[in-house]
Image (tube, one colour):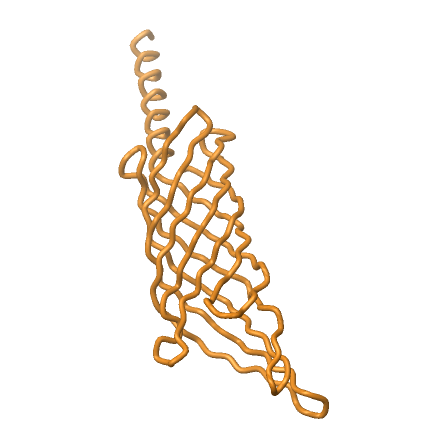
Length: 200
């Protein structure tokens, strides 16, 4: 009987240790970010929302490799006026991001982290035109894709061993949008927000 209890204790301890090890090695997080865009000209974009979903695998206790997906809503700029009438641009982006995530725990439940990596993006630009009275309005659009980079810094608070709250600041650059045209430009976004993470 004593031997059986000993074996059961060892099995339970081993299972718990394995669960803790797994929980340290994998993380899924989703963050809602509020972003300001800058295309480098006289544009003036409204604040827009971005959704960031990431999977991280820890190959050291303090360092993970992360693959993520970034989706934005349609983010419009404030209307502008030229000789033909009023117009405004609208930008929407999807991106795949590969990054590294170093971390530093400063208490049992709290840690700071960073992320730095590269991204592959696809962006759609729409231009809505509002002409004078009696003239039809119109919308034109074009797609572009390319590469860029991003950096982020955040704070995470663990509610339990598996669930945590994150607060994150993010800076992203999409380089050479519409590089085949004479009006190519870089698009930067500065964002901040919060999200939740689950270790498994």
